[in-house]
Image 1 (cartoon, one colour):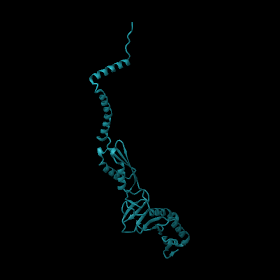
Image 2 (cartoon, rainbow, N blue to C red):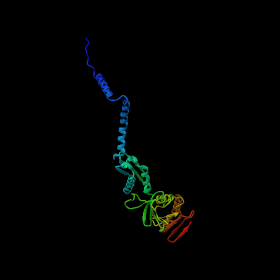
Image 3 (cartoon, rainbow, N blue to C red):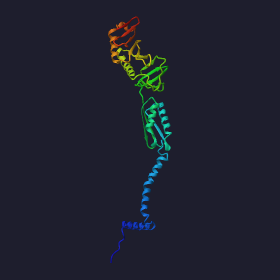
Image 4 (cartoon, rainbow, N blue to C red):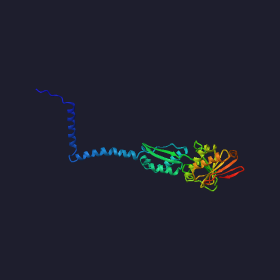
Length: 289
């Protein structure tokens, strides 16, 4: 006699699957069975894809919800955010972050805000626009027609200087004596070479003749000269188109070697504008050398 054994669990599962497959084939005609497999494959592929498209384009999951502006002063931050919001108003699909033109926003900020030197716009999922702004560093203050302007190293006035926008440093200040010349924001008013000349002389004058600069003046915005008024009541006139170092060397020799020490307290001005000539005037003398 043979003893019958109970089939194992695995064998039982295979048996059940075979039975179920045979039952399904009874209900599905043989001609449709291959297409039935294709149908299920299409559902598996298109289902998740359709859901993803719906999620991206027809919901606010990836809409821009926040605009973050970094490394800028308060008024620049507000202006940059306003520009970004205006650009976002034209973005389709509920302002989807995938359709935000980051380069266009950066270009608009640079063109409309002269105080901005560089700007980088990044899109961060799911819905944040990140704007990193680097503002210009002022090289000097320009006073003209009763207003002060922040001027960059290229000689471009980029912003009116107000108490709340002034940097926390002391800047060289130039006063324009021309009452007809106009200053426009974003338009070059001084040459780059002139700005460098002025800042170089401003930095080196105290050690050259032991006097501090109290004020600087120019006859006009197009002038090729600049007048330095010192705290010892002297005035030194420079040619801004020639080397600052060479003129400062001449000034040092004139003050320490040429002019008698007893005349220095009565000195009014030293004129270095003429090449190879120096003119200086005291209260009662005028000399050219």
